[in-house]
Length: 376
Image (spheres, one colour):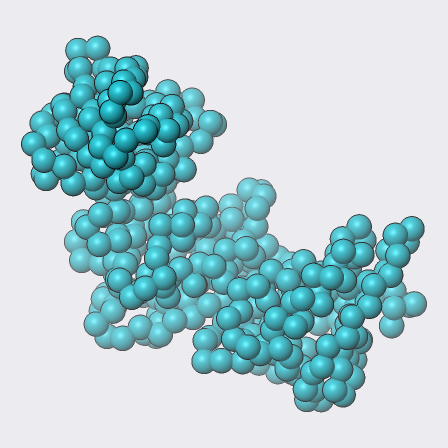
């Protein structure tokens, strides 16, 4: 196999697939990037038996067999090459590849492409299509609320629901829950049965990295055990689904409220980031004292100090005092794009909800902290 390609295109392809590879694998072949000749070019892929990313590099006149090259070394060498055009030539008998660019030449020890596991793929029509920018926003607004520990596997994933003409993505770690709903036109969805699938949040984070912010369509296909996301004809991500029960988010998002606080999103985020400097050594504990026209934010950490901030608000209902984890509030405010947001509260001991003041259907529910007597 021998081909010539642009250095930038090669590096971009390596970076697209390379992050799949982890050091935890016990199969040496999975530490490699597969280069396989396909019609009109090279398919580059990485796979960890749970997540696969493959991308297409258009080059002319490539013949089999392919090769698997060590991901880290291949990436570092390709990125450091001095020229604009790279030639890769492989020897199938020794499973070595010669990489040349200008006056630079490197010989890499690889592995036979035949040893690389078969890549998962879902055939047939997509379940739905969605603009890249919209899907990227949905992931960005939910991924941070997913559980990080794997003691309850379903909570390390994102629940994807296709029902009533909409796609909803939900994450939770039991302390907070994020839900983003996106209506779909008839041309955007299949008339097949509704979908209820748990996609690993890690897979969606890798997908977010690949997505642009425009209107190019992503074809999404859900199977029995797999989810597939195709970005045109160039790049495809395929992930195993997580088995198990995901909490019923409809029971968490309650429409009733006693107090609604409307505030400028970035103003509140900035105040929280400052007061968190004191709160971070006290489990990010911040107390909100809400009254007509203003909301005071207070953090007190023994042996560290005290911080206070005040922001202007519009209050519907009575005033109250409530406590939250400042970091959990900052994370949601950083992904709300509307100028104003709304805090929907049902007293100081019930979960509160944050939502944008816009047409975007996004809900974020978080548990309050129990206030001490001196904080009330």
